[in-house]
Amino acid sequence: MAQDMALVELLYSLADDDFILAYRGSEWLGLAPHIEEDVAYSSINQDMMGHAVKFYSILEELGEGKADELSHMRAPERFRNAVLLEEKNGEGTYLEQPQFDWAFAVVRNYFYSIHKKIRMQSLKQSSYEPLTDSASKVLIELQYHLMHWETWFKQLMSSTDEAKKRMTAAIERCWNEMDGVLTLGPFAEEMTSKGYIASEEEMRKKWLVHMEKTFEQVGAPLPGGLGMTKGNGRQGEHTGDLHQALSTLSEVYETNPAAGW
Amino acid sequence: MTGIESKQMAETIYDVLQGVRDPEIDSVSILDLGMVEGVEVEGSLAKVGVLPTFTGCPALGIIQRDIVNAIIEVDGISEVEVNFLSKPIWTTDRITDQGKEQLKEFGISPPPANHTPGEPWEIPCPYCGSVYTTMENLFGPTACRCILYCRSCKNPFEAMKPVANIGDE
Image (cartoon, rainbow over all chains, first blue to last red; front, side, top):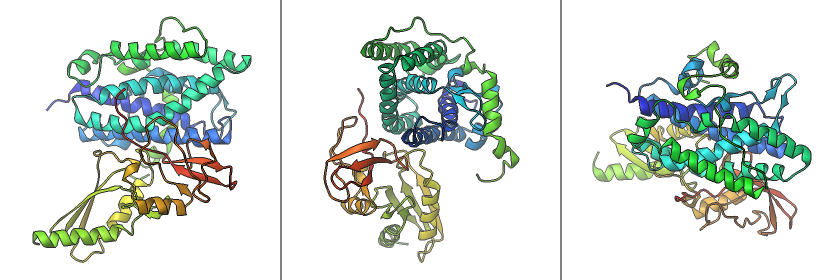
């Protein structure tokens, strides 16, 4: 039987989003602003990696290949994550002169987590049962991530001028790429008509309503139109940052794909 | 094997599972943590249904191995199958009273009963029982724990995060 492309593409976008953002988060380990944040952020990344595994495992059951291979051996153009989530944390690497941008980490994770909650709430009503089961489990853990990122977001937005300046720059940057996260991609209509997930428009609207509330609370103006300037990851368009991430994270795995890591 | 024998065998297996512990909290068995959803015996095959606590918990593979190693020793069992189930969802109210006591022995305050998700909860110190405690970090050394400080006996301690099914908003 031919694969249900809408379902498979949806699963790839869910898995790849969490996978790549958790990877970027893992690069922060030891570099977060303070040690408690290192504990918290790495715990969140571990959860997110677990969520990615869940979605890759469903793909494995659908005959797409082994979960480990799906995450480590696919070519970049086969990834369906949003471009915003693959972007580097800042200048340098985690090994050499990491000039990472904490405001970008906070804003990217906060924006993403709000959308993830809306997406998971929709998947709880999905016509595809493995998705409803996974979403219920993910939502429980996500609740803690959201509390964490919302606290950072609101506190930094109510902090010093320097903090606000950095946050404002990060907000502008993420806003210009956020449509790439909110979009469902080329199979959007079919995903929705088959009852797998709510429509892109509905979820985008909910996300914006939440943002309006948050920005009002911190007394900041809501940015203008959302953008997707660097390509649509849902149709395999990516930046050099994804290539860099995948070659780094699969370096050990590729030395011996047959070994159990 | 008759139905009664299968049932007796399942009970034996439950006894054995009492000895399988969470590798990261080794004072508590996986039974008392509420992770075992069911045991079935078909001839010499034992099937154990297990509920993961947190999705990304790296201990799951070790727990799976420990379950197999423990049950395979039972007379009459030659094969063990461990299935991680996605339903029902593991929640902290599955932890038994004994499990809660054993968590305290490990220095972990057990999750509260009847907690509303998203609301703050009162966390007593596992050493002195005081609720004059502060949350230092919502996250801890493992996915299921958070870090606190007791202002009464001046000890840092950990607590298990409450995990309940979240209704729709």
